[in-house]
Image (spheres, rainbow, N blue to C red):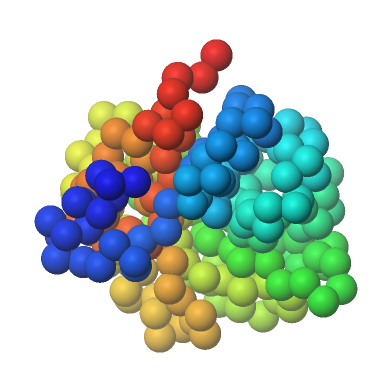
Length: 212
């Protein structure tokens, strides 16, 4: 998207350092195929049962699939099978199940979801507990812990919240082997996220339009 390029340049960053994840929940495979034809390679889905038929139908396109929804324990095997990235890890139990159930020869890329605004209505590990969770996840096989992800509380200041997550991300870098991902920013605040250092922005409405 041209808007991402402009936001990157305004933040004195290279647009090539920012990956667009097109959030395609509630959208049909035909819409995803059109988006893919424009050069988008990464797509985010929230609901496993909805995502699987689309992933199978579009397998010939070689897309990268990101799971960005709440993970239920009984869905971990399928998520490990169908997705390349999981952005919503905030429990050791779920990460361990994904590690154990990941298909032979495959590596899963994980992001720790941080509840940066400490909103009781949102998922995510508390900022103060992030390093402890990272240390445990680093010992699990078949997964790569790549960075942090967050979703903001509705009334938060995006610039401040994203800057705080970026600070935590930088502080944890010495603990991790492959620490290169800050997944933050959506259609309404991706500019602030990019200014704070986002490497992945998750945009749905601005690409696909309103959802039914």
